[in-house]
Length: 306
Image (cartoon, rainbow, N blue to C red; front, side, top):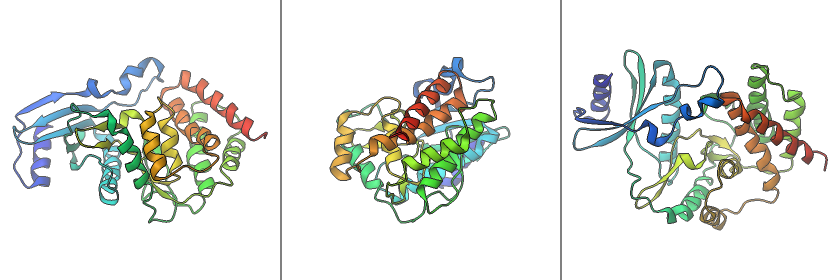
């Protein structure tokens, strides 16, 4: 495996690369194994992560089972789009490939040890600027990708309400139903979510798609985002998720609002947008997230009564 990684880096950089040192950093960046008490019997495979170097250049390496290659390909594509189309910092993709029984993704190594948390304001500004990337004109993505370990459909659509209610909410509800977890009539729930979004005018923009604090970081000079699940959608999906698993610092929202203020009605719409991520956690981990999904659905249903 290590020889395959050396060969891939050498081929893609044009410079011979031999690993002189590798450090397992999987536990320091977090993985789903810590949530094993909440999972179904078949938990998603966690990435093994390493810092590797030849003494001159350092890389960040992710390794997983060979059938995980499509996940790495989707991640690499999103990162390349972020680097090409926006000025928000994100890791540079170096190599991607497989060995006999593993798949791997190699990124430039980023040192977050000299982080400057005062850069939250900059992150808000940069994300807002990223959300001005609207050149595609439709909702979706060039291919299906993944939200965590779950397939995320991205068929192109000109209607945002339909896209989100069908390809986000109804999709997750269908996956839950296949685990014999029913929250109610799928078509009805999707229609209620559709109607909450009905009068909101949305311009399709590039979104990160999985923006929680674990997918952000800071170097000495700049804020960075990584582990994207990109598509063209409503910019509010990114802001909503920053409030779901631990609210970002206030400076982030000040920076964003100064650059691209949110529209009226966001507080209601974010319930629908975050319902998607709660449903995904219910699908992946089960347990308390199913109860959280039921509670979130109750709040959304209450919106339809007003």
